[in-house]
Length: 521
Image 1: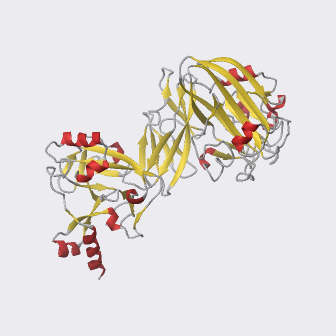
Image 2: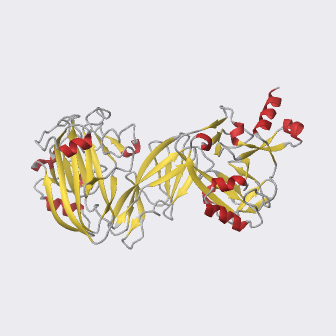
Image 3: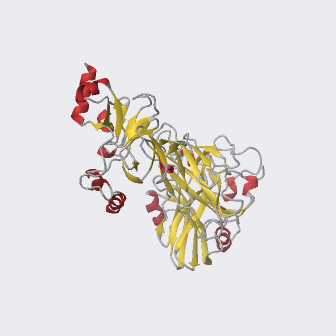
């Protein structure tokens, strides 16, 4: 494979024109590097597929830009490529950003004019010889981008673009290990194509793009900026999704993207892999992402409590693209991803709508009158209760809010309380083995309300529907309380009277304890 062509004689203006879109006007540009450390690369898709963020773009390096690939022979022939170029050392601003001395800095400054304020984005790949040996060392070669004097954090992890934040153990989905020389670059590791998004002003703006060695001038690192990607027409904004353990959720990640192109958008890549409707990509962490025909994504989780990230590329069909981040908080919860039994089969709770029919234990299919959602920290009294599969009969694993009641059928209940079936709050069922409290991150609780209190089937387990009462005013914003009151005007929102009785007797905590003691004897 030939060497990636890099025109190291390109001027700063030529480099700026290569990476900027047509939606702003470039006023001037300057480059502060040794001549061999920057340039315009071409034929990236052919010569370094899977590495370069675009076919043409700009490369800034702490070494010689042409050493990004070899001229002949095997890929990645050395694990310690170093080419000290006598670039700028000890820039005080860069030292402060890195928290250490910096060396061989390369940076491009561009002044441009925008017709209006808005968001701007930049697609890039960070590649480094510091991988993998120095991932957690002091040698954190870094990339920094500032707009009008303010530096822009990456939307992932600790916000830094360096080996410590993106590697085989941290944000692993965004990292590519090249120590085996699979890809045509001399770099031992590199990131997926990522993005930085920032706000710009109407009028003149100043953009600075920096890469520098940290703590010494050895082991090269490079920044590759996609051609035409510094633009305002199409901005893929970051999405955060809460997903239950082994849960399924369908989401529209394009809903918050900025699209000034006038064209419809299509998702073309997930983590750099080409996709189309029906394609499924499995993340390194185990989650599966399927692209649907309507442009949504369906996520299928695994059984690990974790936070994972992936990227998607969106295209307007006319050559304008952007890359967006999706952060998935995977934790147990009676939330989006929990399947509810309906006459048409089991449906994820987040896909239910007002008016949809849900199967109930006592009254057959019943229409939903109201759906509520709230996201809270999964800590303390708000942490969800996870119930292992088949703990209370034949059902799948699920999680509930602490006060969400489960239908328990027990002969001792009939003896003690005169009812064989009782409702018990999930928190009162905790036994630290099959029923546990799980803390960490955030959780989104979903509530479905019917004309009467009902028993529904969540992951095949009989649980209660939402029962409005005194807790409603404390749990929801005033406008939500008003909404429920307008649906049920006969109900007293202070006491819950006027709505109807509980579907089964609800046990108090001390009654559950008594039931447990009798059953244990």
